[in-house]
Length: 128
Image 1 (cartoon, helix red, strand yellow):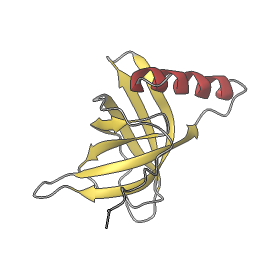
Image 2 (cartoon, helix red, strand yellow):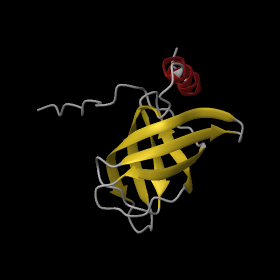
Image 3 (cartoon, one colour):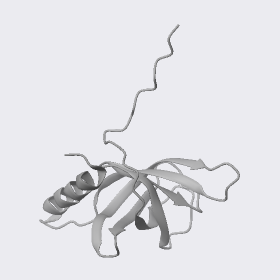
Image 4 (cartoon, helix red, strand yellow):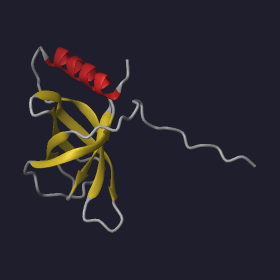
């Protein structure tokens, strides 16, 4: 009997990119801390990213996320929904997976802003 491979559930191709991020809890289910935190990404795609956190989040929590490259270029600045939180073995941190939900900007330029962010993410992940 041949074991079938697990189907990839992501819509975007993951790229191993380590970038600086800031994040904070916007809408919570059980967490109470909504201060800005600093971290680094583990991997990312056009649709979301994974990062390291000292705080466990619950799937469904909404975070405000700012991904910055070289302290200058905004890669993503908007909201993201927590889809998973995994505690790393024998470590005091969690790997948090989030899916981008869109810009927090409500202006006429939000659509073009989101499009520019998507293009930057595609270039970083090597996707054409």
